Length: 447
Image (cartoon, rainbow, N blue to C red; front, side, top):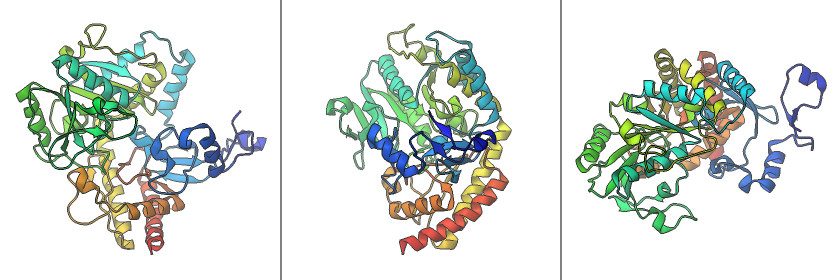
């Protein structure tokens, strides 16, 4: 049984600084080492293992607002926010209340529920391109379903994606990009046969490819959140829409990150482009596992049981996840997004000024409520080849220095920085102090 603290007085007082597993494990290292004996690499998502930054990960015991607390009781000002899934702050009262109420009714039924209907309606009301919405369990499941649906609707096999975009752990989309012009993809990981990705083509991001009538769909991150936040170049998304229309292909927006993060209508509202299919995740689950695919009625009704494209999931439309998602969307008003944009710009300025004062050359690009990090000078990256010129050694030093000072960034040089409602002015003032110390520490460690 897991319990916080040995001393009863600490439990009674609500103090939960350490995690006791009953086996005397109290440190991050001890728990991670034990996890490695039960879980491959000790983690359930590869980036958490800190391979890109060195060292071993902190193990989170709890979180509140803008902070996470590890099992040793150390507090970190959290700029990961569950990779964007948490936007209101950790353990937000509205979310925890919704989850508690839903759990009391039961955790899974394998039958339709009112909450899944309401969440689908809430998405459709906010995103006009999504006349119908099908809920599932993850962003990966959403992109996989979107690809299958596009192929089923068009009767074509080829898919076009972009170098540096990440669409989850979907076999057909885990592709190693070529250089320069669009190429047929090769597997980007072991375990995927060449044939699985042989119908996936890759183009450079921010370049509109010339399509042919064998292309079923183009799938794109409308803002590239997996290579340090790269904005779409003027005309790029509009060009994709026009080129898809020219050849009869479908345009898929992967809005797993941008959906309800950039604003009520996501990236498609911000850039005024209407995709045929949209993939969602993260924010629509209020921090719980969820995914969704939305699109026009004509396209979406090609899914079973109405059409011939199969999709199913025992836990799809889970009542607890949909309750949390509804609570989150209800709170995300236009005023909230305006405030989040202002906070994101302020955090970017705090980070930029601290790094500059310490002698680190770092840029913090901002697109609405999304922020990236690029360790280098000159123009900001516009594609993955340019993004890969970021100085990963300096990032790793900055990351480790941040941890030492009590700041948690995502442990990868190409991840986004996420600011949420928990990051108020007081917290940002605290961040300014911590990041100045961290930048100085990072420079010292680099010699």
